[in-house]
Length: 404
Ligand code: EPZ
Image: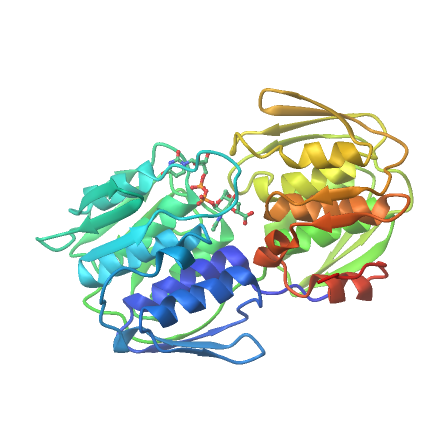
């Protein structure tokens, strides 16, 4: 199956178009709810935005003059709405955005974002559920050391620094492939971002950014989810339109369960014909095992042979899916930030509820291997990050249907 554009890249590049004086064309934008919400936010702000059914978006940041904050109700639907802070501060010197929403997986502080904005010369305040940032002197490049590796803070600082006067250095930066994707977008629009993908990113502020054409990268968590489902169901699945290197942690761990993984150009084939072996997972910033794959992986480990230890080092609240998996027969005990899973022979269908995006993915994987039917509610969480799920899974041989 062909993997679509990456959610976490799309929701960073879409606000980045507000830095540009002319229209940008974005390709490979996924048909997911988070993108629909972002489009609605920009439309409500008066930004000309249009798209085709093939995921080609045209956004004219040059035709937009800020007139009040983006609508709170839409901003609070997604996490990545806070990238509007960096984009609007970078372009116009001020921004007022409600605190974001997003998956309920932990505290999700924004102190490192604000630390970066302040270092660039902005005044920041968080009051009454709204973040206000502004500069009276214009942003000036600065050296910023992130106390914790943060994807969001790295993105927001890149957006604010792209048009700042002078050079900004972000140390201890996130290295996710979508950070590189955003840097490639900014550079295609005439910016100068160097070192993205390493832990030191250097941004030389540009006078102005022009329009550009940019195709975003594939979604490695979507790919990981289908690869994990292939192993759980002892199947044979080809995922296409991927960059195998980005999936190294997933491929390595699936091979550890006993699966065969064959990489070939921009595709990966995953085969499994036996019960997976238990293994240990520790989520870490890229290139470590991605926290976003922890939940679907824990569904697979529920039926593995042996005891698995899953250590979630990024999000303190990312084990909620186990309450639902236990209804299906998962045998797990939680000790602090570690889930200890005793593999069982079989899971059983049940009525379960998705509590967040990747928890929903975990329930789909569990439902595919369980004996009997599984009813999953809360599928609006799944729609936030997975496109055409029913069609894709049916094409792979799954028996499922969506009940509106
Ligand atoms: C992004 O969240 C992703 N979301 C998350 O994916 C992903 O789980 C996460 O990165 C880690 O890879 C988007 O890109 C929209 P962080 P983000 O800032 O940016 C702490 C999904 O399923 N931190 O890298 O919010 C934080 O508490 C979603 O697609 C601070 O302490 O994550 C966490 O422990 C879920 N202060 C760690 O850093 C800050 O100012 C990593 O968070 C910011 C973060």
